[in-house]
Image (spheres, helix red, strand yellow):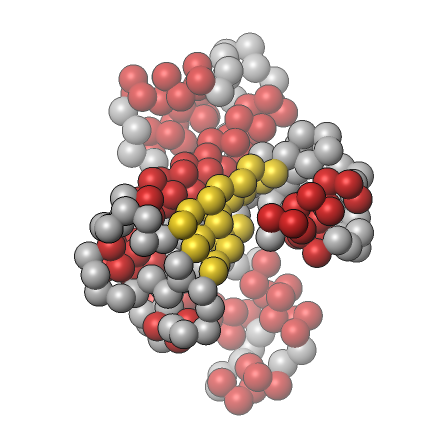
Length: 238
């Protein structure tokens, strides 16, 4: 949906979420604020000095800044969801005639050890959900759906929290986008496909499908062992 992608492709693959709904990027102002925070931490005062800085130092400062992704209003001039909607209305903002989108089984299920913001009890998870906008009744139903009770262990609550974030930000928007693209008039204008990658052991995390897509065993993902037969089948589809 970026205007810069016009005439560059006919088919698009969206892995680990379409950046709409709860997984949509923040506004440009959030990205600018994040850039200034990183520059402050690195004691850098100009764009020239930032470009001359070591990549490792920038990454370290970024990891300590609790960053999120944001639109830059250039490559991505607006919220992706708005651009998809405009495309459905005939505004020419969708630059593909076929789209495959999908996610892994525990997509986005990553957090740093020691992160104090991760709920560890059913009460804390309920508070997190209500703060996010759910009613108390909806939060209770969510805990039931993800099998969280007052007797759940810390690891069980953390796992449920990760799955909720994954479903909210990646899995559900991925399904929603497929339904949206399939309904664009006239129906059939865009062919749409969806995949769900679990990996050989059924617990693939974010980015775990990349090795299989390219037939490489370089990531050494700790969640599963690379499977060449599965990789060969995926490469056919990709």
